[in-house]
Image 1 (cartoon, helix red, strand yellow):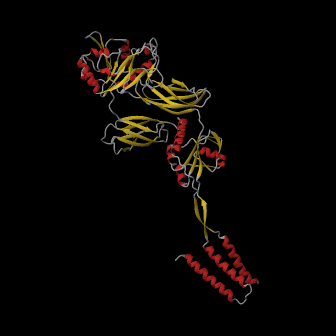
Image 2: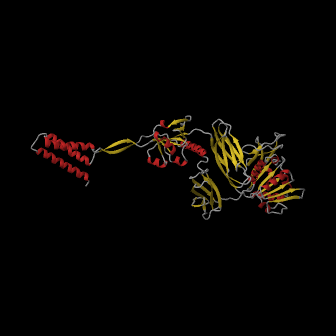
Length: 608
């Protein structure tokens, strides 16, 4: 039985006893007051044991807050509303509760009522009734944004500042290939900023951003060293250095493209190309026709030391065939048949043509035409859809190519006329060029342009290398303490390969549907170059310091937050929630009447 019912029974019995005792008392003076005091004393005694409770209705916890993250200065939140110009907002003018994810800002402004949030996920779970969040500053990370799904959000980003908003570069290169850095820069006005690319203490390239607003830029260089290196991109505005950020690159030894070059005559174009290929250590067999049946043959960087006629076995050992159309026409029918068969099996063919009419059957797919628009003018040309043109060539270019539906233009004149065209031929690729004298770049001191052109032609046309291990890492610019997501694609299945990250053995997750696909999660614990091993693949990735690319990350975080708020609109009206609380009356409400009642009964008996 509940003790509460025992107390009720005891108090009722006590009350009846006291009332009966008072009515049988001989002295009847003040009887009514004594009965009332006895009743009050018994009731208050019970309430002291079990105080009465009541239900209180109150609003739920915080339902609308301001959340600050960075981009602050001297107690001000720098931001803008979704539809107004940027402005400075004082912390004191923000309505409602204000929280900060930045501990330093919290310490400076806690007197203004700012509260600190050390863990956003824990905070949101502790305030489940939270419905509206006003974000100020640099926004949130992707993981933090996912926690805010289902909330009504507004974002007031920080001010637009001078600096990088996006950047990308080809971090893994092969010898003689070009490093290309492309990005966008936000210029707010004033002195034109200048971007410098430095490598090993040498200025490699620079560009000035003269136009106000968001501008694209490109920096280029051909690294001369091999292995791993860290270049620097430096932002200058006048004499002030805006930033210095690392650009890690790795020059790997390339698959040696084996080249067979056949010349109908020993002209300067072949001479310079032969020397350049030799310097770049390409395995090369060069044959130049002296007369109808006499040749001069050079064997460079190769173990082949004998060459008479073109055979299927020889072409199988080659990755690229370079020749002119006149030489192709003088080959025997059997040799041309071997070339066509090799093309079907993956060989690359680069052909120089010099006349409108085709004299050999293989290059008939490339239509040609003549134009005198560049007569007596230097040739300004560049790679298709690949930035500015290269140095001018002092040649009179009258012959051009027409691109078909299946063609891919590689190099074109400044007005769009095609100079080099490529197309798929069987499993190989055929590239046709009408450029007569690229060696003029070398004579004019533009060796870099010459290397850019022929590196691109060789890499684009040659037989593709066999499939190897491939891998990607996310995020693209990992910094210390970041969680790394590494995707690995192996050429074939079989036994589980050994995976190591920074020397530590890791356990990957295999794709259930594709046995060659693996997913590996790790942490960035060491700054600088980190090794990565997956089976027979040994590679490296670079981990950045917290201070590297800081402004770029903040800008991208702002953009990601703005996009997230835009993609997750919630227009429901905020519902005012309330909670019911059970409260007990204070014991003082019963102790004082109880004390007064028993005091009256004692006083009345003794004094009255």
